[in-house]
Length: 294
Image (cartoon, rainbow, N blue to C red; front, side):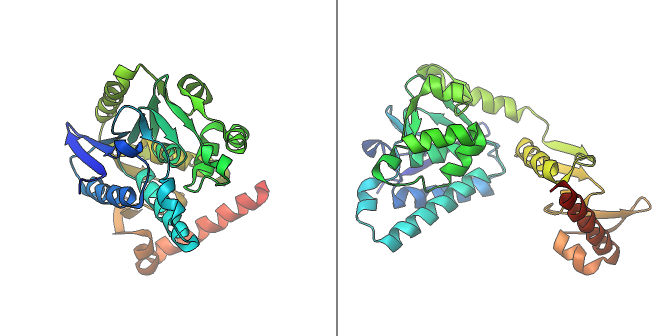
């Protein structure tokens, strides 16, 4: 049986193709399983610096979940399928490499949610996006309600979801769902040009006290933006506010110009009294400021 998801690596770009053109690339359980296998390869790859996701054929990126398969599922099986899809899309959105989806046709329901899991979306005039499953009494189940709201705002996202209305390329671009609107012939080349521009950036980013003057509410937003900008790069962070570096792969605790201890946050909390004391004080300050903002 042929793979329903393909991976090709060329010039630093990983091309992921949903390969069920006879079913408009609908998301079956097998597609999700194959996509997870491909993501395993992407996560381990040192060669892939940018990922481009598209659908096979000329009609669809991904037309949605596989309704025929879902119709045969028990409630428990449907819940497991939805959870599996959610976990898969989260893996895609959390890749260290920047991700670009090329919407070469229908991107509906689960297909829209797959596209929303990538960093950038490129379409053309015949691209069609939306959540038509609401008309069947099915709520977008793969985190599309959250990701669409963050992308275009809660009010506009609610309108699209409540009405089950689909929109074509030009309107999708105007709403901010698409980052770029190009001709059909330029879809892939436009994504490749964008990927090439990304790869020209320096592989190392240094942030020196990037959140030192922000309150806790804005700090979270800044951190999210910085994480997106640092995709695929080595990030060196200089900070006194330990919240900023809690999730780092390695933390160097420096005292009097010398590295006193290195490790992950959990390791330093156990092995370095001074780090633990600084963390506790930092956490108290953070909670105090957050309380004052309420």
